[in-house]
Image 1 (cartoon, rainbow, N blue to C red):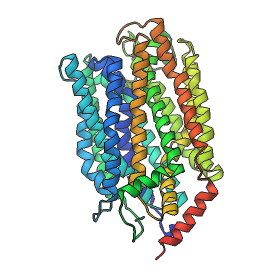
Image 2: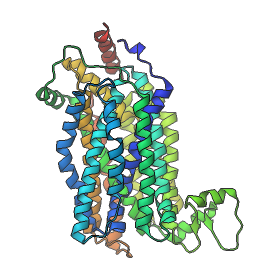
Image 3: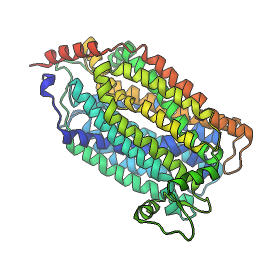
Length: 492
């Protein structure tokens, strides 16, 4: 089948993108709030919470390759990868709720419960997201169509991220009415129901078009051999590992940064400047009432200023990111190639991230400005990761004359989740070693630990991702050559 015949309708692209919206309702919650939830809501020490996140990765070392092997060898009337999206939709939602529930247990019981439920959630994430990511690699072989699919996918993912990062804490405060555990359970249950519905829509609206060569023999040993001798895959594995280690570390730390480092009075005055406070004796309009319905208005007693301020910080960053994804990613990658765009933008992201360490607690406007610059720099990279992985699968087929899309993507999903666990563990371990104690006024040492994990350390790990990209050999011209030759091979 020629790549020119592999056009994908806009409706199918949107349908596919909803699956990533579903995944991000869950993934962003884990990346931004899992460590904070364990320490400040469930009552687990930071080091223990970090070790829970890390231990789940050890188990995943066996799950992720298994998922890739199984999905590559699945044969149904729906294809290889689509069925897994349907089969895992309900367990995904249920395990999500369990992982953010707070049963009344002893300290040891809490650690055991958190470890089991988090591991289950991460395992079902593999069984859902590896086939989902692989599906994006077999919907089309057209380079521009694949980039278009990734761009629309990450517009939806960014919207989901905007919702999670912007509305979680205000909704928790609103639904909990002073009981944070109740608020978390209701909020997570709503997100889980939405995630389930989105996955069902993805299943029914997508189609697989690329199939392995007809004479391909299945061999697990050969699958391992191919990826371990595949330089583009190794570069992308390293990039993904350090990228998501950084995102998880920074996301976890910024909750502490806003709650314990940022000056609450300065933050309140900043919100007042934009009309996002509620003061006695004042009359407010419809817009104010609308925001207040979602818990996005700060009360005059400062009781929810952290939730509103941190949510506004996240929403601003995600809105800028969304605009950047739409306007910049496809445009820049078509001109300069995916690798070059990723490399330059990630280097700029590292630079802007480092600046959070140096900002003083009362400079709220500067904190928001740096976040906007960081979001602009990072935005073009978001759709490129998975589009480049589709290119890696094509490169492997081009070199080895056999295709193992699911297995290739499984390794990257493992790197993603390993990064998620490492980032949370690093953040938890560092802040704990500097003397962090949840729900108290922090010492200068503890504040230093929070600042390090919000600025200097994530900037370093971002830059390691930049170095990994230097070893990624698939240039724009080579990619076009690969696609042309594969199109000829696939022609009956």
